[in-house]
Amino acid sequence: MQFTATQIALLIQGNIQGNPDVSVSSFGKIEEAQPEQLSFLANPKYEEYLYTTNASIVIINEALELKQQVKCTLIRVKDAYTAFAGLLSKYQELVTHQLNGIQQPSYISESAQYGNNVFIGAFAYIGDGVKIGNNVKIFPGVYVGNNVSIADNSILHAGVKIYNECVIGKQVTIHAGTVIGADGFGFAPQQDGSFKKVPQIGNVVIEDYVEIGANTTIDRATIGSTTIKKGAKLDNLIQIAHNVEVGSNTVIAAQAGISGSTKLGSNVMIGGQAGLAGHLTIADGSKINAQSGVGKSLKQPNSAVTGSPAFDYTAALRSQVVNRNLPDLEKRVKELEKMVQQLMTERINS
Image 1 (cartoon, helix red, strand yellow):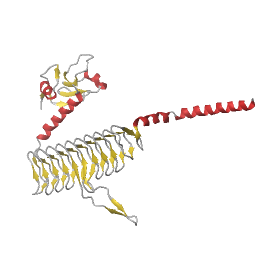
Image 2 (cartoon, helix red, strand yellow):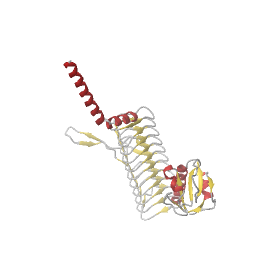
Image 3 (cartoon, one colour):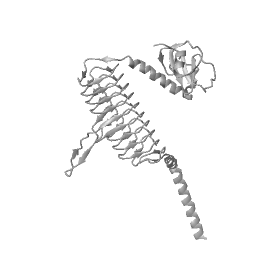
Image 4 (cartoon, one colour):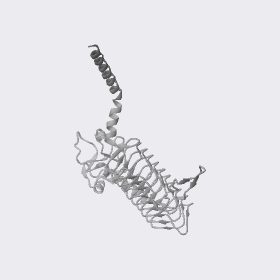
């Protein structure tokens, strides 16, 4: 597909600087792009490549002042990164929109319902009572259990598993290998030291505009629902336990784990490999640093914590400074002890 600078500028509401008729057919990083490719510059670290890139079109921030001439056509926008991301989304929509129909072999229950322009890839399994909306794309090897609901424009990539009774909202993207609705980790300890399984009879509800990375697991609730609210973004390799609630527009990085019944507020940010204990409440706007271990609720909105156990981010940074200076502090204390000892000796002798 070919797009001219004029067409792209209309899509992202940008201003053209250069040849408006130049066209591109693919994307490239600014330092590696070739002719007929589109790139962008948002990070000042890469500005040097703007003057040497072979890209035909580069999207830049409207505030950027050029230090020298460029050979490419520029499209100036308020936020180059956001504009480029929007273009990639539109391009992906064009590509996936072309997918439709049902590949064989696949199994679709006679009681399942699906809307218009649906794609169901080979070796997919669609169970009894499933409801699939318009423009849904289900890639090969996906399992959709009984009575699952998937709303319009959602995408399930290869190998996704959706257990019975789960609900997927509209424009949700779930990447390869993710499991939605497996049993929560519920076992009652017995007097003889064994564990009795507690049946997990709830489900998972994923609201609209959520994206979930590859090989993430979201457990069904014991009773009720494990809920991922509107606009949340989950990275790869995340574990969400039973009855957890992830607030709207919350982002969680890879390898984080959220224990059962913990409630995350809106716009929470959780770094990679962070771990949260169960039955906690995390206030709106909280920021949890990578590898932090959170064992108690964060009740103050927009606070930041780090460490294990996690505590106030600013206080933790001060503690790190002190820790780095401990060898020098030890040396100074020993020198002070020596001076005090000398003064005491002189006083005794006098």
